[in-house]
Length: 109
Image (cartoon, rainbow, N blue to C red):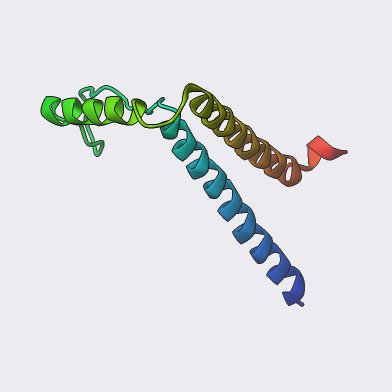
């Protein structure tokens, strides 16, 4: 017989935990760009389904990154945003590692 209440608990816990992990990661990226460290990757030639930026588009994105880095924030505010970004990434990693710990029974015996 299926225990539907346990199924509901697991479904809600997984939905909530995935929302928390995605939320922490996106907040960390937002704080990282606010601090002036925009995660822009230089274009490279790839085969397959990866979109490659044209040099014109890459220059435009680099200009946007420089403009965002020179925003109206003080150096202290940028430093606080950077620490907050790293804290979000650490919390996101901790949540993922805790999920792995819960899934693998050999880790908690």
